[in-house]
Length: 365
Image 1 (cartoon, one colour):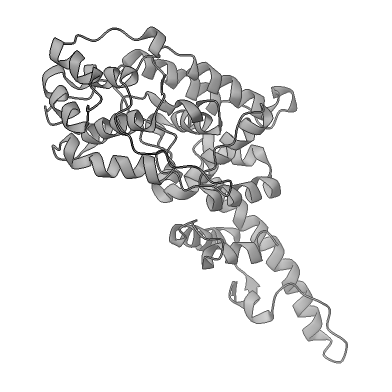
Image 2 (tube, rainbow, N blue to C red; image 1 turned 30 degrees about the vertical axis):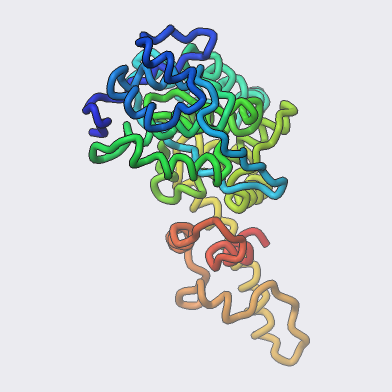
């Protein structure tokens, strides 16, 4: 069980600022927050005296905690790691509401055209959970997001730790890696105001809807690819509803865009929201076999007519033979195993990774 330094669960009821209950504050605590010299050392002391829950709520209304300049985001995109931090939470009512929405999403019939527009359907439920009391807390500075993230890191630590011990990591995540928000252990979403009305919010909420605790089987097998699917849907929704794109996971997202273009949004939806990781490998394997079989027929025809000009093929015979057994292309099941291994070995950080170029060649070609 994850514990804080006070050995209590981080029961943060992260209400929207307009709905926030006023936490109990001593005169010294109010003075600390009013002081321009307020820093994370004060936060650590406040955490000990007021508790994690009150401290987290105070952050949303606290003044800027640092004079450090904000890091600008580039148009080329940033690697954002403040995602998928959600675990089964302690907010019972919120958890029940989310479970009901997940059940509805997993039952969506993508085979029935009358079932409606897929992206509109996802957006409806993303909007539903964004409207749930306590679902999203917006902060106006990156410093406040750092403080909230640090508290979350303390709550998640496998062994007791302190705010001071995690502060450098939390600061790096937000200031240097372009973090626009994160989903906390209790299931609430913390967002930077400048990123709130964008794909960044969609990204966090889609994580929460993908499975209990934001955990899918794909996220266990290959977290970066799971981020790609999450961000694909987030950006697709943002584009459809004219929201700002908050760049994240560029290589993984581009790969999923390629996948969805080739096989359709419904396949992407079924494997992600219905937690069907096997569908990913079987879909890729079926296409790979189709491509290899077609090329094998041409190679065999060329071999049977050595005196004639050989017909053009996509692949060299040696490349085809890599995936053949006893003169035949391996079955889809065997190819799916190969593809899963390639995906597991890939980082989805560079388009030139061997596993990704292999799929470019034999699947997406």
